[in-house]
Length: 257
Image 1 (cartoon, rainbow, N blue to C red):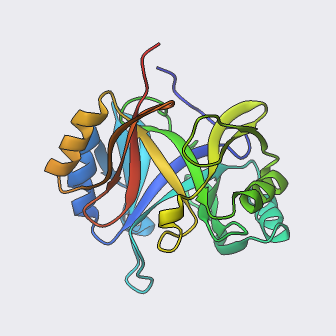
Image 2: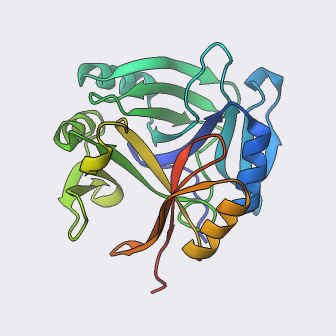
Image 3: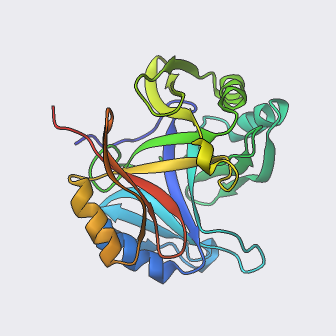
């Protein structure tokens, strides 16, 4: 088990959930993954840090009542300079909604969308170095941009973070992995045709599990809805879930090697 203390520029480094009911989220994800939660206090709006075995894995925050919206997971991309990253985002045709702003005792952040409208975060870690645990059961292991114009998305992230790409073979839709410093860090893929009209361009988070079928049963028990049942793929056995407040995410169990 490797503990992360920082990430390369443009690498997915943190995920958090914004939801109208954090208590529901605690019960669901605590039951599903065994997460424990620490409240960071009123000054942070009651933002919760989720840990697994004492290591940071994710965050959970309450949606502001004056800014209602769908419950959703956000993928944060690491940067050494949030202000410079935000300037590149604007130059590449993206939009910045929040920040750059300091998070006291943690780092500097921004929330933006790429040129296709997919929302993501930028994180310049200081005391908070992103997820300490990743690629292990109960932690995030893959992040992908799902898009009806993947070529535009690829061009955007190449300009902002210098991504390079390789085709991913034998996938149901056209799909590229993106690389940072020649290391695969995530994917950009085309949305299935049947979902394009109702699904926005977005980043999707995969959480690793030991057993996808058992995890799906646990998700159902704790109030989740199954959108795609456990399915074998070249990447592993995966499933797509919607949590009790409507936030979609994916599970994957990777074959042991």
